[in-house]
Length: 478
Image 1 (cartoon, one colour):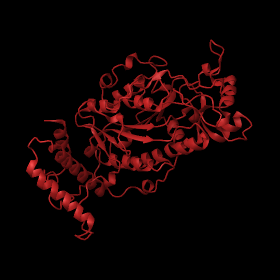
Image 2 (cartoon, rainbow, N blue to C red; image 1 turned 90 degrees about the horizontal axis):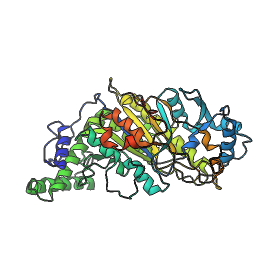
Image 3 (cartoon, rainbow, N blue to C red; image 1 turned 180 degrees about the horizontal axis):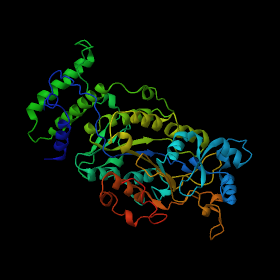
Image 4 (cartoon, one colour; image 1 turned 45 degrees about the horizontal axis):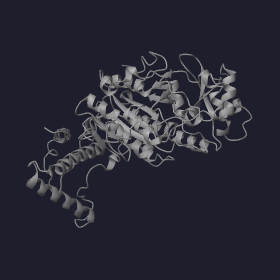
């Protein structure tokens, strides 16, 4: 049985018998299933920040940081990023940042006030900050984004037709495990291991409430153009499917896809209709980026129908992080969208927490991984922004994350002269030094998702860079 047929059969098996027929009737009924609690498997949401997020802006040392030289250097390097008028570092920090402490070392530091939800989640032990990590070894957007999505920081080819690390993980989870893409376009992240069919374990759900194919509507007249179109399409596929379907012709691809898409769309629409409308907080989620609210609504809906989507991974994106100029206004707007108390993650995860369920509730089984193509440079440029860098802080967020700081947040090496007498924070072009490969981080996540999967998803992880051997042990509650 080929992959496409297997996937079609899986989709059909999620439906009750009245919807699972191989040929649609002229006006198929929508069978409403009761909105019941559905077990949520361990699921990873990959939230990719496209453009190179300045994660150092999110995290800054507190004014009582023990290294006064570091404070002096970082203020000189980055003061130009903040509104004019702050006379010193302490005043800036008190106005811009919320103070937390590393639970292991007790070191105080600040999380930017635009990320107030993230701050609260960190204090509740549900955020792991992996300092000095890296997704790519270069500063090019195209190559670095590809490297982040394939999970190979050293990859040097612009080869978009290859597998992604999400696709490899889905394959390791089994043939019925899918990556559900929530944004308006699919990414290489979900590409599967079958070179002849990279999309075999991807479901594109860019609008879950409109995922079903057009159907005849009773509230419209028989001659309404929407009903005419729906009847025409259904008639065509019903007639042609009987004529050429199952004959092994190239046309089978189209009919198989139509059947699978019809089955999935009908099932999802029925489930969501039974579960009721979106919560008002999600209906009225208006953010600076107009694509992100829809992705958040999709995330909520998939958590109501994980069985129908076969979900094990989800993919989201937020663009606009290329802050070469006017960084403060641009990045605070972006950060509040994602990490603010009224932002996308806070609103969505709160509503997901309100869903019915037991021990395998989505709130305890969904982990969010946040990374970017690359970080940005330590020192501000001449236009109130920062240029492309390499190292960054990666984040893991969820109830099954052992929260805290992994790696040295503000390493002394950034503020002292190197062997050539150069102080990194005084030099244009100096990066956060990337010491821990995301291969190491994500291998831990793979083992949480599917024990034994890390070696097939990241076969070179044990040879990849890590700041301190063993420092990621216990990252996830496996």
